[in-house]
Length: 177
Image (tube, rainbow, N blue to C red; front, side):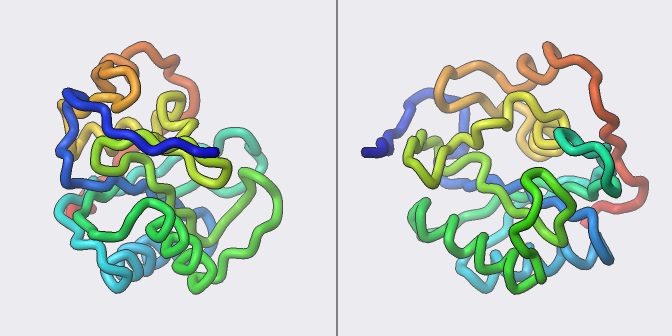
């Protein structure tokens, strides 16, 4: 049995949902735009977009570099319906389940949802690997510099400062939307 709860005082905009989008196959920028358009069509009003970041692959290193972006939006969709919408958008972009952490046309992760904590077999929010991934935290903090982990209340800027440099995450120049 899963759980769904709010964590008060987490330093989150309680109305916003945050997504991390990534692509390392084909026209990566167009794939991210396809994902954002799909989110809008699914009922997400995009209110903030980070810069684009070129990131070195993690987990499975022998693959092309990723282009990543974090976006924030408002939606009335509940978490499970939002996850299903993300999976539909990924499939529409041409994503096929293959190797875990492998190359992908489009990946859309729900990283934070309105300050809620969700623990279910198919859905965990905040995203379970978010706190270890610079390619998520750097663009997230660009658009939400004071954001905190809804489970612990710890500032994500503090979490990022404690991470090893690790894999490269480089902001692309001239890519603001």
